[in-house]
Length: 280
Image 1 (cartoon, rainbow, N blue to C red):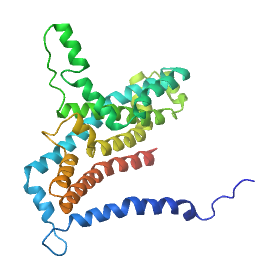
Image 2 (cartoon, one colour; image 1 turned 90 degrees about the vertical axis):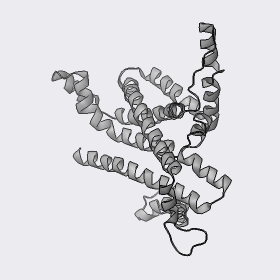
Image 3 (cartoon, one colour; image 1 turned 45 degrees about the horizontal axis):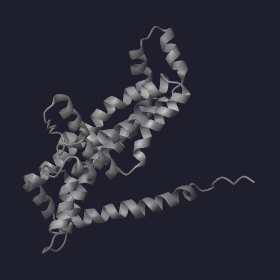
Image 4 (cartoon, rainbow, N blue to C red; image 1 turned 45 degrees about the vertical axis):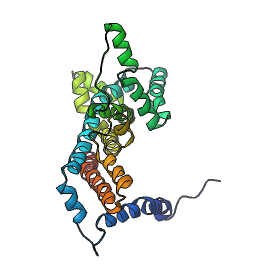
């Protein structure tokens, strides 16, 4: 016997709502409240935020996190759109399944293990450096590891996979008759992409870009293993505060700033999804 439909809408969304409140909203609110406290003072205070703004090393770390995340989203997008187009319109179903498997398979392992593997590959004595040394007959120093570009490279591998899957899921739902109509009317491939594919697949890209940005701006493993600690991002500074002085209010301030940055950057993208849906 089929289950009866949910009579009250709250019966369906209440469990998810309780989980969101208990495991997301309350911890975030607690962190924000903790960031407004300080040792030796009573009541709420902005001294931690003032201290953050007064220290160039902290503001530079936040700026570095933003540059890292935005660069990852931008570079991943450049690769993801052509790859999603190819998967959707240029391969057979059997090859498409194989390519999707190849795209996703590396991410069945731990994020940290993948970053450590790339550390071994990109080191001066790693596979790339050793190969170039054999070809040139002289020691070759790549100078790539332990830098911001190395961190971007490690996170772009994740971003390409995620954005490609999101864009592909949107492209796969596009009615092929729209593309046929474009061809009948004399439109080029670029016209089909600009007028048909891009507007319909844009929500998928927005979701993928938002998730990629969230992961990249707060990641610790890749900037540590591939970027080193000479020019740390905010997540590395936050952990060093906990390991060093164990200043919980200051660590909560850094975490709160990451949350604020994520909201300010992701909210316009989500509003853009709403705008595209209203236009369609």
